[in-house]
Length: 499
View 1: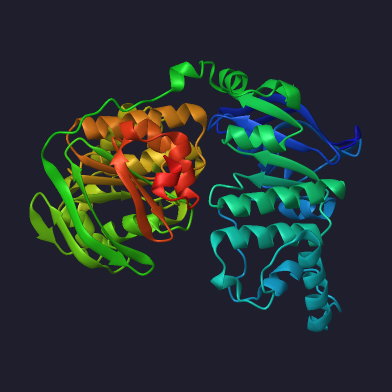
View 2: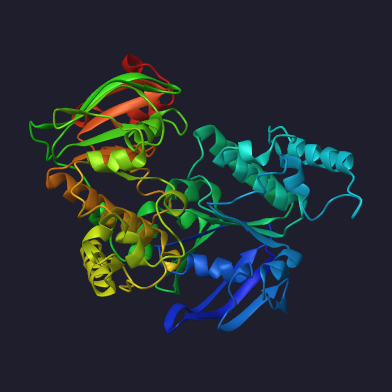
């Protein structure tokens, strides 16, 4: 990192239909630094980076690049200036190979594409930065983690000066996180500036040279690396102490078994059995991609399975998402944008989908009832801004997650399944979502939380199940578990070695 300023934002203001998203933000990014950008959902982080990358135009203020004022009116402008981003839901051209995606728009030979030269260039880049992915593979076959790494290589190939990484480790395994951090250090050595957006404070402390915290559309503080502590960052983000945001499930389970699973198996998932009682939260953890996610997909009717599933003593067949819903399951998936929400529909239209029958008359939706229902959901879940008619894509990640949960609140589901429920959600909204989950359990539902975040499992669960390489390697009441033990088990240690 040098002391040279690469990008400066001076008194940036952004207004959306009377709502001030940014209220005069000034900050700078040094050449070759990793600069963390933190804040609650809705604090203005996404708005700021979309201004820097040309997605939004600013209402007032000034951006300087290398000390010179610039106007960034479109993503193409940002691209030409060397400013880019890799978002959580990054996508590649699925019909192209990995190599074709990396050089897309910058192919050797111009109109007469020299594919052999392109492949040599891409392979050299992959070798340099340590990505071990076959460049001839179709992009459609890549995992989410591999897609993200290829997107990073694309920006490296294009000689970007500044790269925004938005929640880059949300879907990465521990080994993939190590590779990402290695790539970031190599980018730094090339003088590339990284803006690192994450709610994982441990990562922020490990990887960032400086951090800037936004709150309510204003700069709360900028901290040097030595000043970064979890307690300080939390207080600056949410104006509440870390202690006030802690959650612990004291126990709501009764003796009534709601869900019984016997010898459940699916592709890559060895047979396992478990029960969940009324009021109980079963926490399922393990490494990303280790098989735990398939339990949610089975119970949600997404993938086929063998074995027996009983609900309130009756055997149920779950061969489709609709059968799953009718049986009494409510699945809140990890990827809310692709799997649970329609981005171009309003908050009201999204949360009312499961209960449309009760909101129609003569086959027509009664909009006043739809708005009233959505408003009640917003009130119960503390969604801000309280605007049911606003498109869901314009709400923060935390409020989008609340919308997914809100869809099921009045459907009388017997089993709620939450998969990575706070992925990409800020520390303040995490507490609110935890409270919602525990309230659902206290009302008598059976709850399953599937999460790779061990502290999340320790906060929410009464019973813990660890899945590694598709097998159940540990099952016990939470009171008999420790954080270090579960971490060791998730990494492949034997139960007796992890105790």
